[in-house]
Image: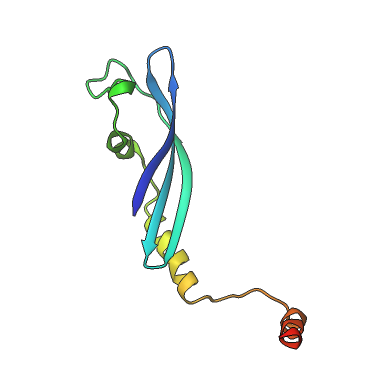
Length: 102
């Protein structure tokens, strides 16, 4: 599972990150699934763990995220559905028309 930080919003008064927008991707061969979300933060500039905005790394922000425990399982379920669909779309008359044209 690959987590990417797509965008950060920060408070200009103290350079603290207030929101991180993230995406998660899971790939299995030719199949993939993804999810997107955002998380808000309240940071204390006086905290010994505070990192100035310009010194942040993507790994720092990923470490702050509290993603749903079932997220990876959900993405895997989406991939499993792609591999062996339990539902399909279409109409019988559209398929018949396609067969007649062919």
